[in-house]
Every structure is written in structure tokens, then in C-alpha cells.
Length: 410
Image 1 (cartoon, rainbow, N blue to C red):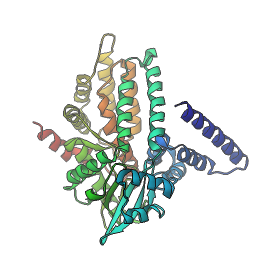
Image 2: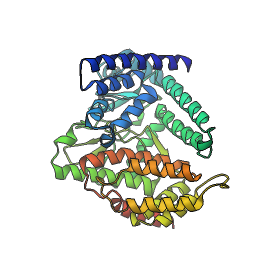
Image 3: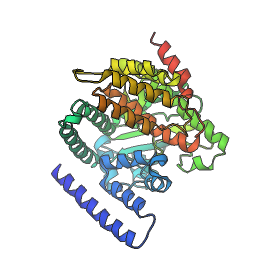
């Protein structure tokens, strides 16, 4: 971890010097260019952070979001030698079509892997290959974050926060992205779960060409992050609605959540469909947590702050002596009532989540840690909705799925 920390410090220092020089030269795009370059060079968890930030145009602004947007599928590709190293490790004797594919430039490159176009037996395939050095960087970054969380939790004002548990759950889920056997199964699960959602496509896994570090799937045409800007407004809104419906099915009915819905994992296409092509960062909610989150969202749709407060109180853990339960209840009621019935343009999940977390800190109560996963999923989704369908009633759109999710477990 010490070597990784030293490298991070050196890269940050170099980026700061370049940024200072760019400001002297009055380059208006300097911050976006240097931040994107820095996160790309650091890789690991830092690159994942850049991908998440790029989904929130409403938070960081269009220029910075555009600069970070390339990290979704245009990060620095690995060399052909590095890709071949992973493929050989998984296959031993590498099929000729795979070796030919990874010797060409990838069609997409993200934080964990690069994707190559391959052809064999009349089929066109997408081959996702794990970066051989990403595991070491990711584990080192997460170890540093875990240590920081453990230190922060000792502070008096943060002592009641289940910070270490939240970070542990997030870190464990992020590390599953390195397990391509598990991701292949996640893709199969996602394809099965979303098969009933009109307008949503998940590629089929080609099992005979999958190995540890290599996932092969059907190749989907028309995957371009710029396509969404070229669609007619009505079609764009229809595709956004299809993606929202898919997410709500995951959250409220299936409980199997795609946490990483940035623009390099979801693509709007000219044929009217939305493609979801990655399932590395996924999380299976425990059934009680899925049920409780669904009930909470139902309360939000109705503007029923009292029910939402009761639900959150039912999930709190540990010693509640000294906690301000009445103040907590009042704050939750006020927050929920103030958020009810708002369109995507009017409602900010970022502001809502910050306020919800802060009121828990102030009142000394903390709800179910697993809620962080659906919130992360919704944060990425909300950025897309705000940008491309701001008039959507984000909450009301969820109502049929919430009802389905509650009726299925009655």
C-alpha cells in the first residue's frame, strides 16, 4: 500500500503543477483535462470515482462532466501484451480468434477491463478482458479507504455511524468486479431479470469462451455514448423511461441491483432500445432490506413522512440511549413531505441523501447500511434522467413497481 500511496501523491503533485501552469496560460478547460488525466493514470478506485462523477452533470457542470465522460469507455487501453497475458492465464492455449482480437485496439476501455471485437464461426462477439494490474491497485486503494473510515468512526460525532460497515460492503462489491466468473453469472441474472422490460437489451453470455479474467458475450451494434444526443426528443425520453423501468424492477422486485449505471455500461441506441452491457458492480440485497427500502420509497411517493420515519427507525442498530428519536422523526417527516411529487428537474437525490445522512448524524440514529447500494444506483440514474428527461416524475414512475414488489411478499 505504501508504494501505491507514494505513486498517488506523485501523480497528484504533477497534476497540480500542470493545472497551475494551465491557469497561468488561461486555459478554461484545464481542470477537466487534468482531473480526467489524473484519474485515468491512477486507475483503480480513483477511476471508478471519476466515472461516477461524470454521471452528475447537475452537480459538477457540463464541462467537467464531458471531460470525465471519456473515462466510461475511453480510458487508457492496456497493451496487447497485457491483454494476451490475461487471456493466456485463463485459457492456456489461446483460441486463434481471441489472440487476433486482442492484438487489435479495443472497442472500449474502462476502469477494470478492455473490450475487443472478435469473430468466429460466423458470429460477432464482444470479449471483455481484465486488466492484469487492476486488482493490486484496487485492493490498495480500498485498504486506504477502509483505514480512513475506521479512523473517522472513532471521532465523537461519527461514532454511531456504521461507516466501517458501509465501506466494507462497498469495497467487497467493488472487488467482485475482478471476479469475471461471478460477473458472467451476474449478466445471466440481469438478462433474465430484465427480459420482461420492453426496450431493454442485455447481451447473452457465450459460456464456452469464458474463463477467469475473460467474459465473452454477443456483440451489440450501435453502442456509442454520443447517440443519446442525436435522438429525437420523444425517442430519447422513451428510452430513458425504459431504463428507469428496468432499474425500478431491479430495486423493488428482484433485489438484484446494478450499482454502476454510468454511460459506459448503458447505451441508448437508434433502434429504440437501451443496452445494459456490464454487471461487474452488482449487489444482491437481503430480502428484508429490499422489502424495507421498497416500503420507504412507497412512503415517499405518498408524501407519508410518518411511515418513512417509522421504517427507518425499525432498521436502526445498536444502543439508542441518547438518540433524539422525536427530533429524528420530525426531520424525516419534513424531508419527505418537502420532496413528494417533484419532477426530476425539481428533485435532487444528492441533496436528499446528504440531508438524510446529516439528520441521522445530528439525531444519533443510523438506518440499514445496505440502503447505500440502491441509493448509488439511483444517483447514477438520476443524473441521466435530469439531463435527458427532466420533466419525468421520478417518484411516481416507480409506483407500479413498488406495488408489485410489496404485493409479491405479502
